Length: 84
Image (cartoon, rainbow, N blue to C red; front, side, top):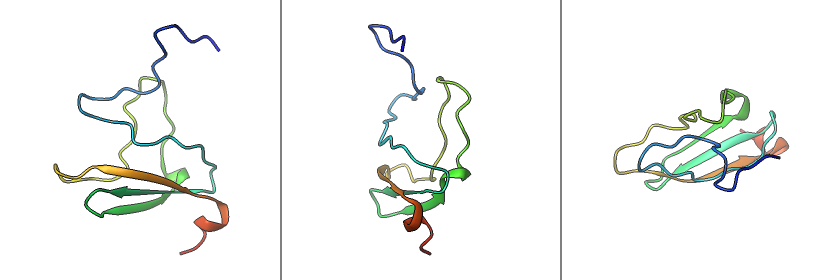
């Protein structure tokens, strides 16, 4: 409601970091991350810790080599998340 003209901090990023995606999700959903080198990981939303403040560093979704980077995030909703 009260956003300053120069913006509001939502997350702290280190030099060279980029925000890939932001999507709303529910507790019964799953998250699917994919990297440029073809690595992927899927996990339930409730496995991700909740941010304590707007200056949090975020959470690690997957470990990557120096040359790799996350390029995509998808939310698997409800019934889709139950498919093994």
